[in-house]
Length: 262
Image (cartoon, rainbow, N blue to C red; front, side):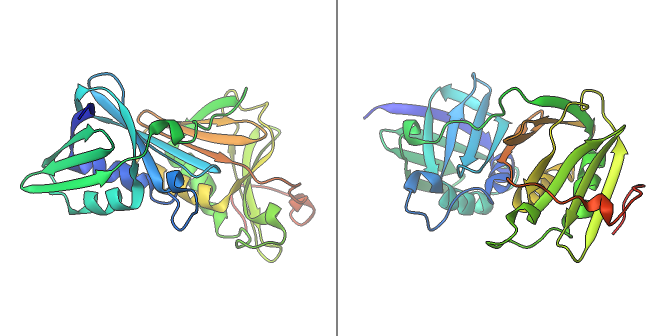
């Protein structure tokens, strides 16, 4: 038997990290690796957990005591369920041997089968993005204020099934519409955002950003390219592909933009 990886992590930190990944881990797919989360060490004091469903990815960094460096893929749904059972304030020791992960938390012991990390999808990252920062609270409000008006998921008019983000003059604008409702919100253009391409963020990714930013203080960084958007925080990164197709010229229905309107 060969030890592949070994670390100790706080129960609460692990549970919180896995909660961020919940909406990304696939269930009911014929591709087993997409039902897993990647776990890997980062130096001797941190681990990373990452979920990737080919359209969206989240990566969370957390403190850990690393005894042996390594990487493996663990079944996401099972690991999330176990994390909810762990005692708050306690620790979980995880030892990877061959194709098994042994979790010990207090008097409880769990044994999970792993998959090779080489099978896990590569990281999603924007190519030559426009990068800028703004208040996390303001970014959350910009998205949350309009997301309700986006068209529900379906096979028609996919270009309306998200939040459009674009620059107009000296303003950064978010807008969503289902052709019946129209919601628009603006804020002063952040430094560095002038060259940002016009993009539409899928509703699921927009909702994830709202949840992630709920308790964040300080600034959040966005990296935007024509194909991808990334939300970057000190210990968390969310990346999502974007919706293709031209967003409609909503300004014909609303000639003046001032704050939020619907």
